[in-house]
Image (cartoon, rainbow, N blue to C red; front, top):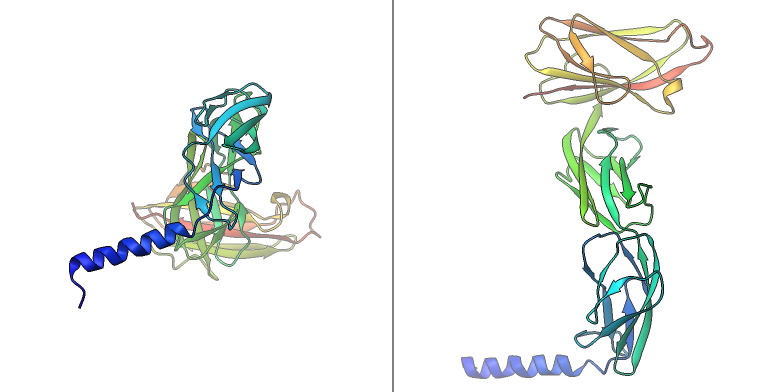
Length: 294
C-alpha cells in the first residue's frame, strides 16, 4: 500500500510524463484561420495560440506582436489591441523563429438594440434574433463575434442565429457583442383550439383560417390580470386576419397587431376577414393570448 509521499511522487511522475509528450513550438494561429474580428472599443488581447507538431496547445508566453500593414491600429508587444475605427489591419505574431500574420478585422460596436419582443408558437417555425448592432459610423455591423444567453432553456432553444419555442411560457435572452449588450423578452405559446379556458400565466395560440366574410369569436373571462393579445402571421402580415376586442380596456402593444387589455368583466375577441381585402383570398394567422399573473 502506497503512503502519501509515494502517491505524490507518482503523480509528479505522471505530470512530467504528460508534459514530456508536448514538443517544441511549431505553429502560431490567430483567432479562426489567422483572422480575428474585434467588436470591442476597449482594449482586447489577441487570441493567438501556440501549437507543437502534434497539435498540442502550448504556453504562449513570449509571443510578441507588431503592426505591419493596413489600417493603423494600436497593438502592444504583448498583443493587446484597441480598435477605434472600422477597417482591416495585419499584425505579425512571432515566437523565436516562428511567425504568423494575423488579419485584424476591426468592427467596433457602439450599440446593440433589441428591435422587438419575440412571440413564438410551440411547433412553429424558428425566428431570427431580433437585434440590430450599430458601429462607430452609425451603420449596421454584420461581421460579429458575440454571445447570446437564455434565461430559461426549457422554454426556448437557440439554433445558431434562430430561436425555437419548446414549451409555453416567458423567458428572456441577452445578446452581447463587444462591450455592448441588449435584452428582449421571449414568449412561447402552446397551440389550443380555443383561448376560452386560459388560466393566469398561460400562453396559448389559436390557428385561424378565414375566407371572405368569415369571422370567429371567443369569450375571454374577467380577470384582475392583464391580457396580451396579438395576431401573428404564418406567412406575412398582408395575408393574416384582423381582430377586435369588445368589453375590455385596451392599449396598443409594443408590436403591430397587438394589445394589452384589462377585462374587469367578460369580454369578447373577434377575428375577421377585412372587407378591404379581396374576399377570394383566404387569410391565415395565429391568435396569441397571454394572461399575465402579476
